[in-house]
Image (cartoon, rainbow, N blue to C red; front, side):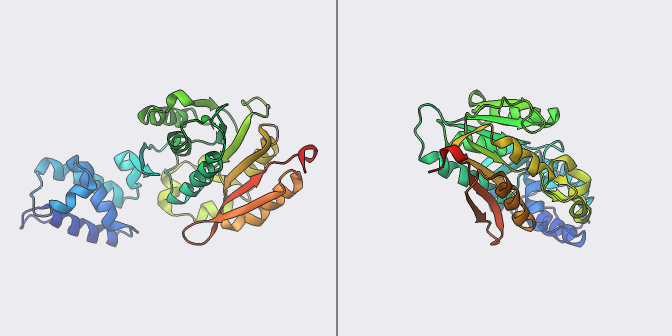
Length: 298
């Protein structure tokens, strides 16, 4: 950064945006704003009224370090240690997948189902692969009558999830369980909703993902097997014994595997009511299936 002019907030943002664009960043301006707000210890929106304010050398030093790491491919969420999801701020570390906006559709679908249910006894939600607990916490915050069991195989991810539950005041309504899928969850039909954003990237797709994803985000949270549906197949086979009759299975999926996942459900013959919800790009993203054992069918 040349020193011939004073480094104001506006000048730093302009220079850094151009620099990150040259490095191939897809959201260079947003990245620059988030990183500068972090260096200054303020909210991003506060930058808009401070364009002409000078930035101290100490803050610029912190900012330079963050920008250098971002240019090297580190995701912004890991650099600042948090990410917004469903209007809530979540701690994120390289131990957990960075929450994506499209996953909010999963939360919306769950809340719609819970909205029409009686509060007593408290409806129970089972989330599989909780990661940062973004889904579990968002559901617990917006459906205060429900109780959530959040399952995660990674102990380090589980620690992040527990801190996020404490951060948002819902730790008393979320039970965290370390488990490979539902192995540690008793096979009892007590849950009204089973919700999951499972790993659904195929092994060949993983090799084609952006370098910053492959190098920094946990592979275990993304890759679902050679074809992307192996883990989903295991999860669906375990779901039947945990859902109450008339309960709901909610899965985030890739548009490329929608037919394969529907085929898995058809094989079970207990999900006669299946539909897909599209994301903002118009692509099928959330699969919603109602569990209806043959003995309970109308």
